[in-house]
Image 1 (tube, helix red, strand yellow):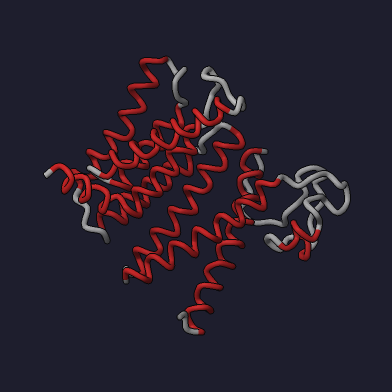
Image 2 (cartoon, rainbow, N blue to C red; image 1 turned 135 degrees about the vertical axis):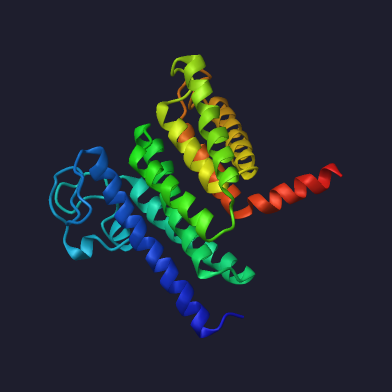
Length: 260
């Protein structure tokens, strides 16, 4: 049974995830449109009308407006709803896990921060086929700092992780002359390496490729894609990174125990 205080805390985290998801939706659109504005009123992506406060309530406004702009009646992208809901559910899931295992507040902050960052990478690559380099480099710098200062990583672990993550994609990029992967994947690989360290970078890469292979085969099977179609691989790398960040140590221990 959850206490009243627990329900209150979890409700706060859920609402925080909704608000952040709403902001990330707006931020990603502005970045793609070349409007580098961190603060400012939200607007309709079709008619550019500034939204009233009651049109900007996460989830509620989308449902109340039936997924359409109140003025121009153009459909609001459904991804807005799903990003808000997904971010909120991920935040709730992470906090419940972290509280259950009794992690330090700095670990909880790390999990929430990089989950939000990975949501941005996932959605932006899925929608626009790009990875924002500023996001990956900011994440890599913060990950390296936090891992060295708070989480007991040694420098060689981060260096090896970064070399494996970034070098793996750099090799593919050079061999294929940019046909297999995009340049953004190299930067994301570096972020994965310094966030996960060695050997957890291998877990992140393995999960990413397994998920990518399964999803790609399903898309081909349902004739949504062909084997020659480009797939936004940053989406799968985001999933692999998140899983490895949360459960990488347990997966490595399980695998090593399995080999004995």
